Length: 134
Image 1 (tube, rainbow, N blue to C red):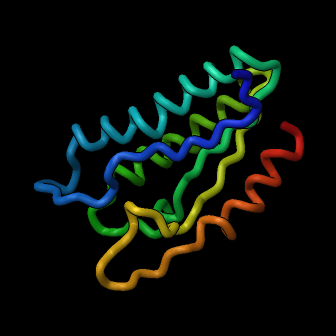
Image 2 (tube, helix red, strand yellow; image 1 turned 120 degrees about the horizontal axis):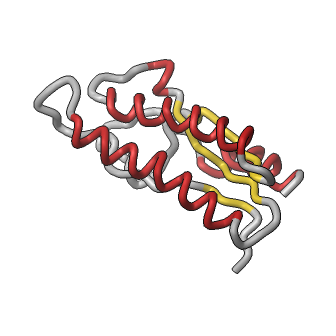
């Protein structure tokens, strides 16, 4: 397998009951998934192909700071910095970083209606951007 594109949508549970405003174990879990794994997967793909485009899906929660999401917001902010730095410092790796709104997925499904973007409509322009020079 020689992937030319990486779409990193792995995620732990975002919304959770917390006992304190900041929980280091929750932050570490999010850093592992959103940052360490993105870095390792990008290098893995790049090791099998001359050039790779990697999509880092960030979040508009960085601007909105919803209640009880401090660790999530911190990890995603760090991920944006990581993805941008990787693009500048790793030859033949191009990263696309987009802050996405809440997207309709199994994880965001709720009993009470909450606005969420359609995944298809949201992703089509990103897929086109990733494919432009992949």
